[in-house]
Amino acid sequence: MTEFYTVKQIDNSHLRRPMAPNRVRECVRLVSLGAMLALCALLYAWQHFETIQLRYDLESLRNERAQAAEFNQQLKLEVAGLRSPGRIDVIARRQLGLTAPVPAQIAPMDLPPNAVMADARASGAQAAQR
Image (tube, rainbow, N blue to C red; front, side, top):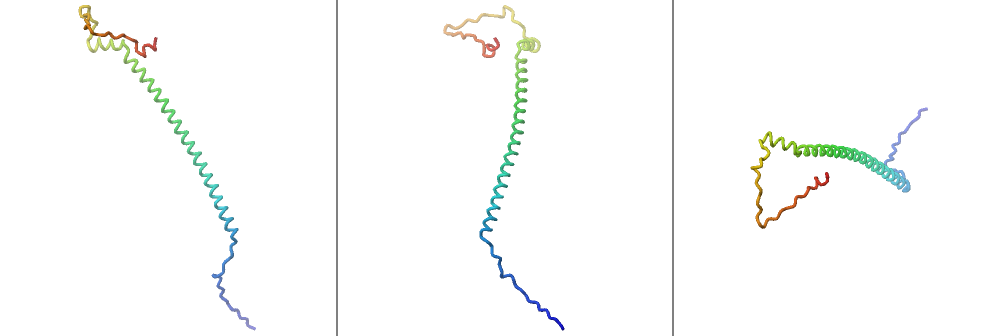
C-alpha cells in the first residue's frame, strides 16, 4: 500500500495575538519608572562629581590666594626697604653727590602777610607705629 502525503499551505499572516490592555499599561508604567530611577541616579552622580570638581577648584583658589598674600608681604617688605631713610641718604650722597647743607646755605623764609601755616601731623602709618 502506498501512502500519500499532502502539503497544505497555511497562511498565518492574518492572525493576531490579542494583547491585554492592562499588560501594555503595566509595561509602559515599568519602563517609565525605570527611566525615572535612571534619571535620578544620573542626576545624583552629576551633582556628586560637580561637588568634587568644585572642591578641587576651591582648593586651587585657596592656594593662589595664599601665594598672592605671600607675594604681597614680600612686596611690602621690599617697599619698606626701598623707603628706608638710610638707603635714601646713601643714594643721595654717593650717586647724586648731595651733601649736608652748611649753615650759610640755609636761609629763613619770609612768609607773605596773608599766608596760613599748615600743621605738621604724623601720617596714619607713622601714628600706628607709635
